Length: 78
Image 1 (cartoon, helix red, strand yellow):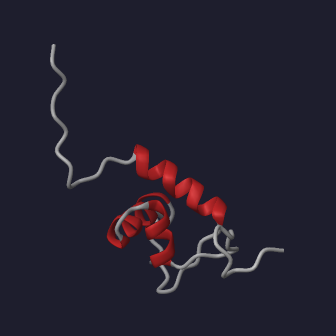
Image 2 (cartoon, rainbow, N blue to C red):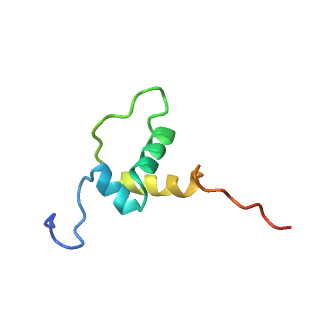
């Protein structure tokens, strides 16, 4: 078992701030991904969330495939 404070140690759970830092996204982007892909059935997002490494893998995938509303895509050249 690795020590949680050891460099390079993998944690069992991450906070929202840690998850957004690991994914290199803002917390508002993290909330957008969660609202789009997880809490999309009318239920409210809980105040406190924790994430496992497998959650981060899904969030990373969704971050690459979900358009960012703040980014304007340039049209393809013919």
